[in-house]
Image 1: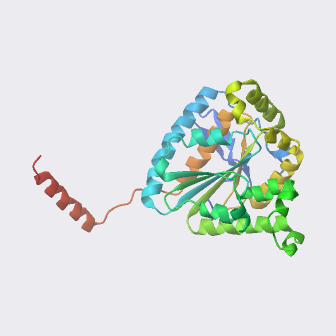
Image 2: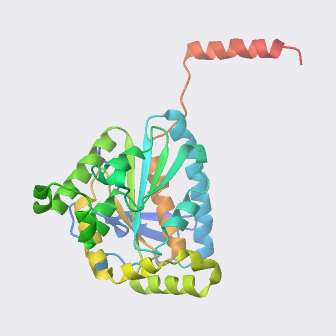
Amino acid sequence: MKLDVDFDEKRKIEVGESGKVKFRIRDIAAEPGKPVSLKKDFDPDFTGGFDDKAGALQQVASNVQRLSEMQEMLYAQDTYALLIIFQAMDAAGKDGAIRHVMSGVNPQGCHVTSFKSPSAEDLDHGYLWRASKALPGRGMIGIFNRSYYEEVLVVRVHPEFLAKQKLPEQTRKDDIWGNRFKEINNFERYLRQNGTIILKFFLNISKNEQKKRFLSRIDEPDKNWKFSAADYEERKFWDDYQKAFEDMLENTSTDWAPWFVIPADNKWFARLAISEVVCSVLERLDLSMPVVDDKQKKRLTDIRGQLSAEPD
């Protein structure tokens, strides 16, 4: 059941033929069972000692092709599903990462779900209900742009949202966040045991870089639509969110569903790191195209002969 991710401190990933980008898995991952400090452990500006943006984007394009080929085998094999989860502060680049990294994926085999505020129907069910409905089937790739993790992030930062969930009084009195961490871990363990590979990416943007991107959205008319006053209001809770993210990473990065903390101040490196992780994990699944048995091969040979005998 353990996802084969190497947290060896000495092992470095060399990206591209030149090998100029070198970073350890532990540089971008929340190691299960270890305390997490975003300020001390993860630099949002980290680029693995690499500053060749053009070269990095070439490697992203190569990874897009790798992913396209593996998606075809994932679909044909019909054994595993892949669930990719993105969480981040506003303007961290979730949409762009999804668009670029998944650009080569066959749309018929991939579905993106964006989780907004829960509906009245959602609130009449447990918090995992709406996510359960959107899970990918075997052979499919599902992408969650935000997810059930909002239930230990925005709901934690804004207790008024929790009050709307109509929970039993005792549930609210108990250690609700500790319980939700356990429930999420058990949910993801169940998914993994049943063939769903879960990759979770937290795009780690600095407060200063978020400010720059907000200003860009305001100053450039073509980007005005991307800016919301609500995004600015949420920025006022920056420290609260950082603490909530740290608790989330520390309590829900597991052997079967690890969190990757992606440096997001440089979009090109974020896309490179995400695409490398996705491709590396899929390659370790030993995916292959189905092989037909002798009986089916004979049937195909017979059909081929009949088709060839038909007049043009």
